[in-house]
Length: 155
Image (tube, rainbow, N blue to C red):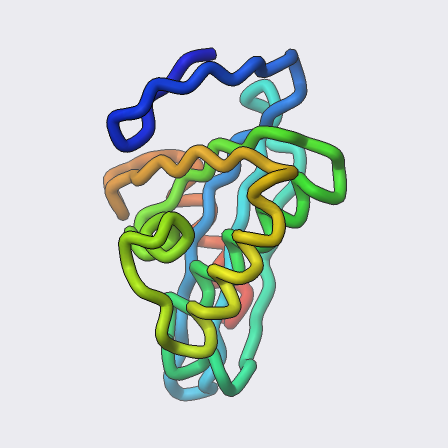
């Protein structure tokens, strides 16, 4: 499968079942100072796994829903690494998810520095294609990830 990234054409051989799509989203509830992460993982367009996980790590809480987005993205990437999947199409609605990883935005908070470090540690094992989707535009799996992120913190 050929695709273009930042003006550079790349050819990636994607064997059947060797890649997954993941939709990620985050939420935040100030009253309880917790963030939620939602992940929907699809293989061959069939939902293979979902995550709905809450967190309250002090270094991340200040980032509100962005913390949930980052943690969701890391979960999707870890899932691929753990299952020897080499190629991930990562669908997200918050642009930092891609921009911190590829270095367009400078990571300067503890949470974003950690995220960039994590991405750098796995990028040779896992090729991530970042795909931005418009939030709340009716994209089925983006809405699903949003629901999972909210359910994690009871909203």
